Amino acid sequence: MTPEEHVEAAKALFEADENRKQIGLLSLKYPKINMADSYAIQSLLIKNKVLAGRSVIGWKIGLTSKAMQNALNIDIPDSGVLLSDMVFENGSTIPADRFIQPRIEAEIAFVMKSDLSGKASRSDVLSATEYVCPSIEILDTRIFRSDPKTGQTRIVLDTISDNASNAGVVLGNEKHDPKDIDLRWVGAIVSKDDEVEETGLGAGVLNDPVMGISWLSERLAKYDEKIRKGDVVLSGSFIRPIECPTGTNILADFSDFGSVNLNFG
Image (cartoon, rainbow, N blue to C red; front, side, top):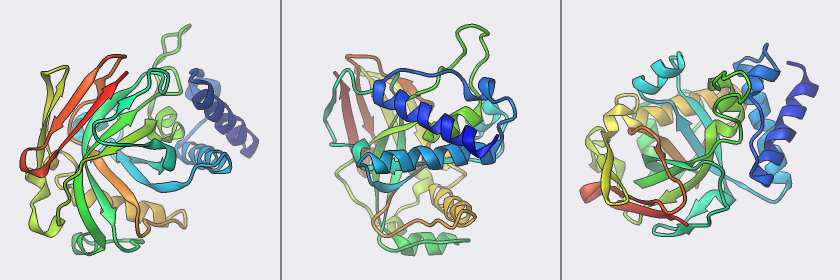
């Protein structure tokens, strides 16, 4: 793709989010798109959002489970950016017109007390973390999941361009020192409208959610970026995405680790 096409795609995604109206698959419009193109589009999209008044508050890591990687035929996670207008209070109700096709995932969130840059060991990540807490990530798609005319489905390059489908985050109230807990064994029972929909353990995230943060730190360094003090980092989901149409009530019960609930108006 050309730089001009990057700008064009980022503008289309920005307007799709603002207008709550999906656009066509970028992978169909730009058949030569590659992963570098996708992250370039994402970066321009975030710049447009910052110019519109948002601020960067952290990062999300996606596609951390083997099941999701196999489904999309990739072998690495992806990442997106958390913005100030994405934060919702625990227990809040999302306005019905806020998202296009919302889904949720249960994750362990890291809140950082110091910068983290480049290759980071497990010990480095733990030392840079102020606390961990339960969280729900809200996903949305500003790109059609499948093309209405051809039936072609979106691919990971579409998702990355679309800020890794990131749309919102809800943090639980409980805060924990990650040095005191084996996060591999932190799990959640996620219920939709009082029925159990998904369950999972932290080990589903690259065998250890801490290593997701390490992966992100190393990836960002390639783009002269880093995880910063105060950032919220969503380490990756250990459940499949749950569809949340209007009227859906979600409860993610992490047992002693805490809980997060959310309603879609």
